[in-house]
Image (cartoon, rainbow, N blue to C red; front, top):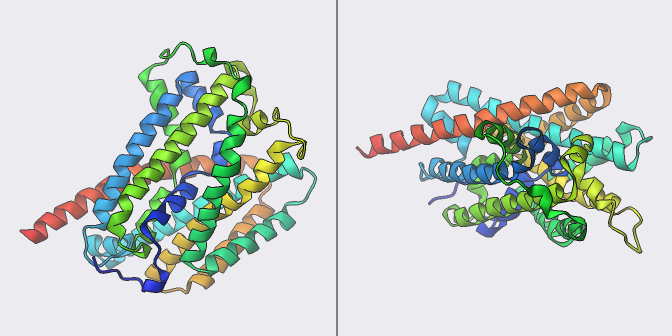
Length: 365
């Protein structure tokens, strides 16, 4: 397949693993257990498995969509081909806003964690400004820079974050998981809807696909990343359910961080502080990837230089973060983003799959 991107900007197929990982794992991993348990109780782990399987199917569709052309194009060009330039660019701009909005949601969520756990009396602006500068530095360095930070985020998770969760195992109570099946299918599906929010972000593949060297070889790595993330969420939620009773879980807003408080270390008195600090790199990678996608889309739709659109996005995020103080607005924004993501993943992508496959068959005929 011919690639539309210069060779020096390409990455190896296996590097899609850290990119997919950081896109699917965000601040939500710190409190997703509580939301899932509200609907399906301790049967919510079933939702994690169901959503993981569905993401594999959607990922397969994405590869089919992107392989429907032989020029190594991203989704913006495919939209223009399928729906015409005007309608296609409207769709493309909507997708740009979706990724920009996702970056803001993640940014705000991490700021909230810092405020609640680390610096409760510190003002927002200094922290937000530092994060914005780090994000600008990463994204302005190009796609390979974002990939490098994503790889570092994955390594830190494997070395520090996951082992910290496993250290809680001696304090768990496996009988908490019983009975195994005591919720209806409706409860499981409602829980699955909440779980979809945690996986949102992998759709970035629709944009960075042309930046993969021999992209057809990356599919197995992409599915491996989805499997790993699903397994990670499954392990974390099962450990959480075995650690807390359902009554306790309803009253705790950040279950993952609260579990880490029990771990004793001769160096760090508060291990959860270390986890939040180490998590910064992965969160920066997540936000940087979303904003890189948004800037890439703005360049395709309006021919705006990426650094210009990046500055506009970051200034906008900083302004909203500083002036909007009502946390209920951010809660509503997060729910709205979750609903939009549900339609994007399970609506837009399957529709595009059908359209591109029909066009492919039509052109062959």
